[in-house]
Length: 367
Image 1: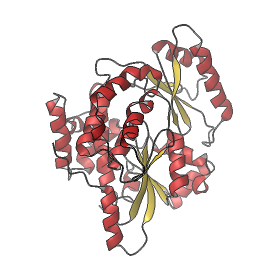
Image 2 (image 1 turned 90 degrees about the vertical axis):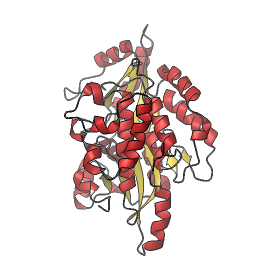
Image 3 (image 1 turned 180 degrees about the vertical axis):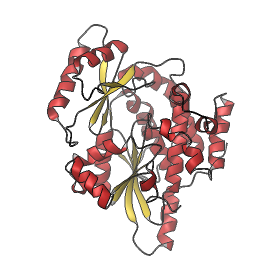
């Protein structure tokens, strides 16, 4: 299988030679599961009809495994939870949408100085940074995304730990920590922090643990705590077996030194010159699977270390826009100290661009 995925790093070098004015520095953020919903149906067809060879390469890989092609899933007449949300379909579909968006970033206007992502978005970030080539990326993403095809292991729920102005509320965070500790002391209950997601905490656990969390966490807006449909207990010890299967299935040769710096879910920077590929594999298939993923820290390290002019959040969808902004507000980055300031600044001169937002998308691409 051959995939003609553009190399953003090479494009950066080429653009330096043809553009005289300084390009804006951008950190790119890749989304994870849950970002392809009803409104995103047809995303590939709508925005990426010019990338048929890349999409066909993914579908050939999936056809060999007797899996439905992503072009067919994306082109379905209607959105279906049964078809669009299982990991074996959602992972490859979201990967394709995000990487195609990455290919569309205008490299004459922007220099990508670092890449990060949320949860499954870490695999996408590896692909964008060329730490996984096209063949390796779909192998890793499809393999890890299909691990629970025979049945989910545990589940996840999400709960806010911010106030109405998107400022971190330490009292709520402490309450969540106490509830986790209390539940884990109960027989048959398992509950863990899964993701630090901007202004939200994602919890992973077994059914007993999640039910107790739903009982103990105060109801907010008649919405939270919210179960995440078709999500397993990602980034928790419950996925030890998934990690072991990943190591058994995915060899070290799949991983390369990134051509663009990467920031992982522990805030670690993987550089083009200093990366040990064996350690990159160990993190990706080990701690990244079984320990909490700190998306907030990843975003904060990225902006502090690489000082971007803007942050670009890849599609599909824009569910990661809020958590990314909340992680930046926590630092008072771009002068944002609350939701009102963020919204006003975005209206005047947006510094965070979501490619899943039609208006902001046009500011990212040369199309």
